[in-house]
Image 1 (tube, rainbow, N blue to C red):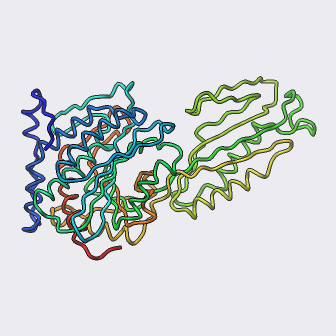
Image 2 (image 1 turned 135 degrees about the horizontal axis):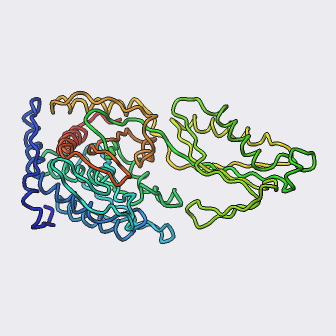
Image 3 (image 1 turned 120 degrees about the vertical axis):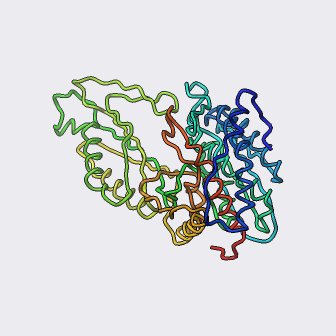
Length: 435
């Protein structure tokens, strides 16, 4: 059991369990649900302790400390836990992997992440509670989801409800800002996905929705050069159009000719033009110099591209390259692309997982969950394994304000998500209908 106790909060924590009326649960479900209920106070203590430990992505030590808290929990319920270090040059904390083999049966991968967007210099650092409303950095994205994973597994083990199969829990340490090179940062997660029969991710969600498809994301960078000259000669045969007009031409044609397919978006997040552009550090900042009476010699733009599937991504890249090559006089432009997160395509196997969730919902007295529109969700770690295994996301807790100092979580969703996860995991491990 979770060992961190705080005298000032223990009295209210013991009142944390929320009673939910469940009318459709079977006799075999009852020991599992009873175990979820019995462990509610300890689960909330775990959540509070991890939220109070800063684990901003760049705080490698903090990420490892959160991992150590989870290690103790997982080893206590019989998981073999290991830590995967990343290269020092990556400046990331690493990943926590826990495995337990229960015998013959399906291989189930449960995914979470240790890091948050709140670095040590953020003013948002502490867990707070106001009735059933909890606040804190990463409380819904996704330390609440991690607590769901651990305490769903604890309930199943205490209820002796697992008869076979293997469970791998993979908590990455850099989901909010993936380390480079990407192939190194995600190779172990991808290998775990290839070995699994089902993959479940515990980013924030609700009982109303489940995520069985989501967009991928990539980066693009546009670099333009023109002829530096006195502005009075702009448009002449000797001076040409200049880098700024060439950049404007390209972006305008992107908007008019590439935009349109469902789910495809591309955003020039940074645009600059002038006589000279020099990078500052590695965070995208630049210094810019130029004069009103000088034709811009250089221009750059960079941004992201979101897509529904790989075919849509490659078609957009082809269109963008063609537009870039059609240069104005005395200008030259190049565009480069960097693959990041693949798309989690909406597949029949993923939709079958939604059917499994809704069978659980019926036993819990919940309305059927709907498939969240894929074009409305961004990239996540599940995207790296989705090309290889039946996958689902959005199984974590319900909250609002993720990535802001107003991030919160509905306490009632912690128990509900844990109940749902425990029954779903039990069903999947007992299944012989492998995808």
